[in-house]
Length: 219
Figure (tube, one colour):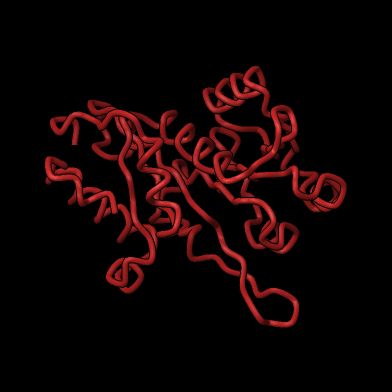
């Protein structure tokens, strides 16, 4: 969907294809089950995900809730504080309390929870989040948004983690992941970019919410 733009830079197309390949492997990339979008930086990538998810819900202002598993990266924490000022009810949940507190939150607030956000490996605390456990608790109710920046797709392919529902009639998986490319792409800190890799059904809405493209010279 996002490659139909006539003047879309070829450099970005190649980069987005490479990011998808790293995140989900050759077969899913070939079948176009997933896709990637590059953003001007990492924080716009998170905003793009949040905007896209909120637009799928019809909740009135103040009703939409997000669960953020902490501790998040400092800039990400500041970003969600801005979302609170815009009316999003953000509940922070310490990574050590996920197994006990997350089920209660999901059962109490039900459809109000529009997404759960966390880093697969927290930066800089190096806490590993149990993605499978979160998927089992969530049961497909809220969108699952994962920041794989610190882990990179070389260590964790969050989008490929699946758990079977009770009865085995369906499975649950992560909806989208983001990568801050500013440090990791070149290793020398001389570029600024971010990206989101997502299931194909999210791509049109993500593209609508991306805003500006990164400069081709950056990638």
